[in-house]
Length: 447
Image (tube, rainbow, N blue to C red; front, side):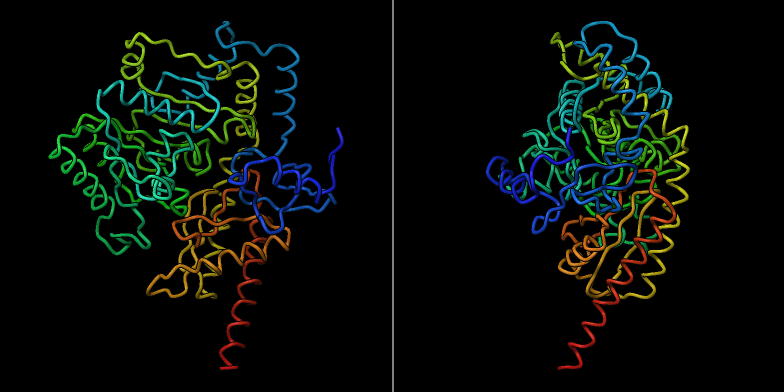
């Protein structure tokens, strides 16, 4: 098939006419038309190469040959309804189980992160027989109606907060309630969850679950303080609820040191339910929920069959297995540690030179660069962040912003991102920030 069917201008006009306007593009004022990709690089219709710093979905690299070969080979052989017995689904579940705590051993395969989180919500409510959910401020867990209801990032722009949803403060130790100078921010933030539980119980409400991204992404690439998860889990379980770790953005070794980001909270910590998605299929729609035998048993006991036409089909599982193989063969977790540490060090060097950089944070290849107008007031530099992203796009580097004020430059590249890539992007960021400073100095001189 030709790499390009239509000229860019025609494609854009057709999209504007045929595709819902709420489905937004990167760089909407001047979209990039991508026609092929490989590794951490994207190519437009003119063959221009872009460095991809944001496609965490394409976990082991765009169009990795081992993944595409596995998909093609299995598709030529069989892709059947998941009610037929097949080896791939059990083999894949066994491989995933080896990365998880032993009690997380029952798997449900689905097709998207939203589908996984919706099922996790059902599992939690079926097991606990409770309704209410605790989430973090600025959280995003998916686009289904059930998940918009537990995503402050979305529901605050729509119908607002339901009475069964309780919002805890985001444990942001840079600009949150309890910061890095606090003696125990993990405990302090966990106690805010305990306060929510107590308040809900005084109103006669009962908690089904605490839903949390293991590292909040939409909230601004936030690294949670040590001890937070174990203490929150203690409070939630005492109230009759379960702990749900959303690993859809951060799972599969992105943090480098561990396979799952929740493991950063301690080797002994284990959620009751874990959801996973985006990186699983390297761009193919594949996601999953894993839970305990007890929770799965309660879900089975309701007498209603759970069936998913495409979840765990042979092609999807072949792709999932290939992704795990590539991760191991190419030591991508090790690469995340090496490159992620180098990137953070380079960005911290920039922080020492450029006052607009308020914070550099991250682990592995999950990194945030927060821009502020003032390091004391921490006023978000939203406009400057957008301008930086736009300038970098002109230098053929794809980045984007996140956080409550879109003032955090986020790095979630394919796991094959290299040391040289880190050096290139940091150098270009420094160059653009110097341009900002020069323009600001000239403006001040005119005044």
